Structures are given as structure tokens and as C-alpha cells.
Amino acid sequence: LLTDLLAEPGATVLSSPVTGGGEAVVVLTASRGAVVVDGLPALEDDRVYQVWAMRDGVPVPAGFLDRNDGAAELLEDYRAGDGVALSVEPAGGSAQPTTPPLVVLVPS
Image (cartoon, rainbow, N blue to C red; front, top):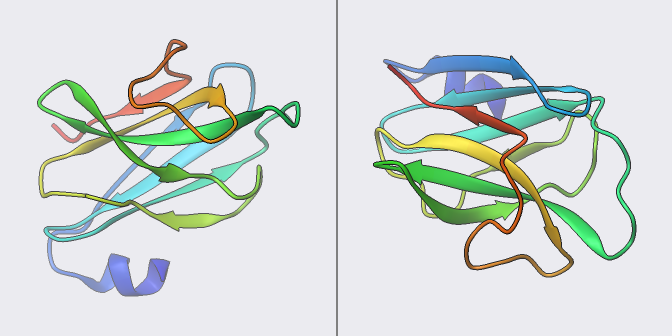
């Protein structure tokens, strides 16, 4: 998955520490995006890490992280130019973030 994305022309890689612990890396291309995390704290069973596509500053639901470490997740509903944010949400997710983002990665 990641090697395919990295091989695409114009692939952009962004990384940042995550508030509360861990690291997030995103790979963005003209048609797809993926997020990889490492070292995120475990959450209570009633909470999930939700991924957001940041479209013109507006968060759009883009999926969930299945694990806290090393999981590469393709973004749902990704469009060229989107950034990525991560927040902690109630199990099942939210239509809009209910907590401040733990990390926001936006291409310049």
C-alpha cells in the first residue's frame, strides 16, 4: 500500500508528533491518501481514533484507525489537496469532531 503510494508521481509525505504521544505520517497523492501512526496511547473501549480529510479547513470523515501502531489506513473520500487530521471520538465515530484534533497535517 505505502510503496504504491510513494511511487506515484507527486507523492507528498508529511509527519508530526501527535498530542498525547505517538507519531503520525501521511502519504498524499493526486488521487489517494493514507495515514500511518505509531505509539498512540490505547483508548477506552467506547472511544476511537477517527481520521478526517481536511478540505478547505473543514473536516470530512475519512475513516478510523484499526490499531494504535503501524496500521496504514487509506483515507475514505480523499480528494487532491486535502490534509489529514486525527481526533478521539465516541465509538462509531462522529459527523464532526467533538474533541480538538490530536494532529493536523496539511500540504503547503
